[in-house]
Image (tube, rainbow, N blue to C red; front, side, top):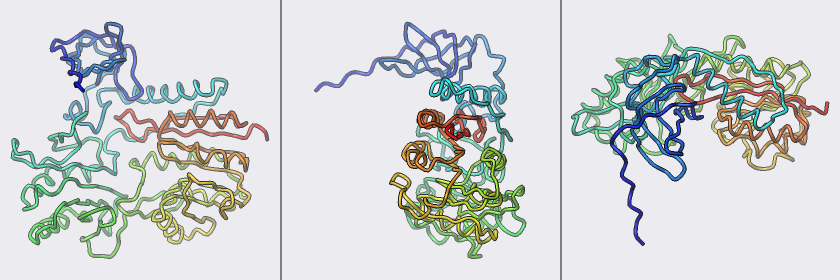
Length: 450
């Protein structure tokens, strides 16, 4: 069977009028009867672009020059913004970014439930730079550059961006990028460290508030471990090594027996502990605002019994416990449930309990699903909550607060809930990931039959 020959792409830029943005933040234009997606182009702009690929139904192009700029175009704060894949919208004014994200959410919801007439909640906003507390940094020795690169991968590429700073990472992480490159370049194992996972908690005067997990493909020589240890002490970071799968992650500094970072929720008088590999929200300020909004939307009373599905380490569950009779958190990961229980004990919370369960399986008959639940909070993964919604419908909670990281699955699930007699009362975006096209949202559904 003969392979189809790849079509040769033109080397001359084409002129395009950008009409709008796609949901992933690329400019949309039309050329010779086909849609063209243009990276870094903004609505209302006239640009020259080079085609990078041709498909049957659309083409893709890279911005070459701007003939007429949008009023919303700004100079990126980061010098690597046009190359690095960590951000996609640094050239877009933050206010306009937010309007774009709101439009994306409301368009999807209005299409899914056109008669809803829901209240549009004010967006939750916070810092647009220096906010990101978790990341996975790629590491590679590049022979041509004779240098170890540490950072995010380039846009649509496996290459690592040559970067010495990052404007979106928490400064406790970003400021160490050059030092990390120098450190690894001086190790015997400089070719055997493919990534560093980083996490930061709230600043802690008694210990390290940031953790670095070095993945290594071969055992580290004693001299390399000594250098890593010296670096950790000098920079006041917690140092972990990962010689294999996630189960092999282990701490080597400080030798205090504490595998935890912490973040506080001062409005609720809570301090939550987490392991550096645990899932936590990357944006601490938006997380605080998000929890407060969820509690407000649930409209809790002392007699309420709340079910928090996909509860993680208790990020919502534990704050909720102070406003109701009982709250039960359920999560698929047993490790995260143990972390949630640990946090409940540490914060002296007795009205919250936690269970580990596969939430793709039937919930009927589970002990935690028979407690007079009248309100529900959902914080599912990107795939949404469609598998659990039928059983939630069966217990007819008065209110459902749905926290979403994917407007497409939120819209799909909203359509299902409305079909089953719920009303989409309100929805709004949360700018958890500024400078990217990622849209997080929260929606309130109330039982229309009560």
